[in-house]
Image 1: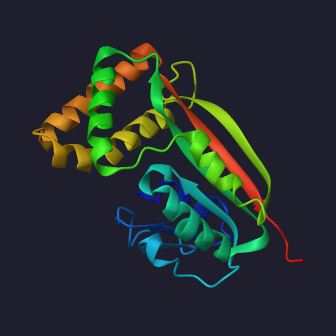
Image 2: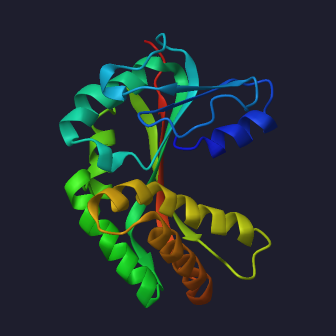
Length: 220
């Protein structure tokens, strides 16, 4: 769940629902948070720390490149389906590795991130990831994929400040890996992040995300 921003917003909006976030790295808040949200520092490969058929909805974002195919098939998806109620829904949000209409600074940053990423993550194409999910058809139905264009900084949008935050969140996600893998220091990274954000606004850069969702079949 990263810093937990989405869960915090949802928990504040839907106060009668309960929300649970899980991440291997504890970037989420531990003290100041709504009472209906809980965060867990945990590795999903060790199994999810929840009872079976507990959740109505399970959401995984930007996770496909963290696990090899075998881990998805035999560890991650079986665990997710175990804790999902029959009739419940699962949704994946995945990012296209390309950015579109980018300037030279953003292009260099993107290439640097891809160079770093190849040593720390597994690149899996969206079609390959879809294929893995389709292999669970005996347990899932209504498997659907939607492609979305995400303008990280649309000048004409009243939500532009939120969009800038999304761009910065992506760079916060890359920060630790880049600092650990290059000679760049913290101040240099922050200066670069500001330049990339400004350039995204200037060029109206955008990316594509894919939402894949499916419903767990009821027991026979």
